[in-house]
Image (cartoon, rainbow, N blue to C red; front, top):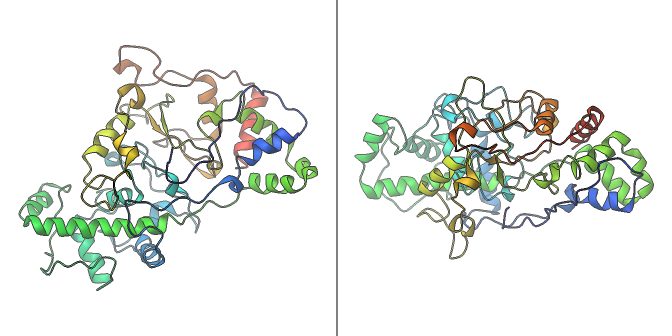
Length: 398
């Protein structure tokens, strides 16, 4: 769970499996799952641009800049905005070199300690850098990213550095293809360091903008806010939705992981989701931990602005296989009914199929890679068809 400002996650007591008349307890619990319970996130100590208006404005320009791609047609917004709304664009499906993982929602990511489905980045700015060099996304090298920003936004103070030497107009990166890596290693060490600093700063200003993206109120928020002001308006919440919320926080056990106003505990869990059809099982968080530790752009790295004590989530990282094997981030459920594909690889087609997965709780596809056992954390729920319908009705309202 994020330690930089999010302190409203509450695990609701289980035990309610059937609908009862609205009560003060219902409204009190419901209020904890609305935006009214959300407190502002703290600035990111690893990003000196966090919260700065000039950086936010510049970051917005970079977020929507298609010039930050080899094709000149792909920007950050291409995958994270759909029809003018910050909802993942699922016309860009997960690809081979993204390990078949789907695009995650970007709204409210300022509350997260770890990014990506496997948590391999520990800041928004480190996360923002990876797609720029990914062949299936922006498909640029590190030098190309920096040179584009310098050319498109000349002398901008956010990326200007004291290095006097002209940066080479070549395709070079330590994480590129063989030619790009060779070109990178031919560069002087001080120039590599300067390029890395500029590259990190580009990620930081993009992150400064992304930190400002807040979720929009859902129908659930509107209903509960109105009922909070006037309990008589609880009747406006459809009975099926009210029953679905009671199930969500009780018998269905959803709130054990999807807690609070953002409907997530910001943690990682193995819930036994099947692999994408035709693809091998994904190790998830286990592989992400290795990548996170090795990332020079992590909170403890040379390009971070964090001070002593600012990187505790990384310093006290649990590296155990039991905790991370096959585990994936708990996604926020806000807007979940608007998604056309669910799961870390888009392997679940509908919300009903996802609810039935949790209701049936099959063993993890990774079970054959261990000494045995189910591996998955979930257990069968025993929901009836009408209870499944009520739970879906609630999920469609949030």
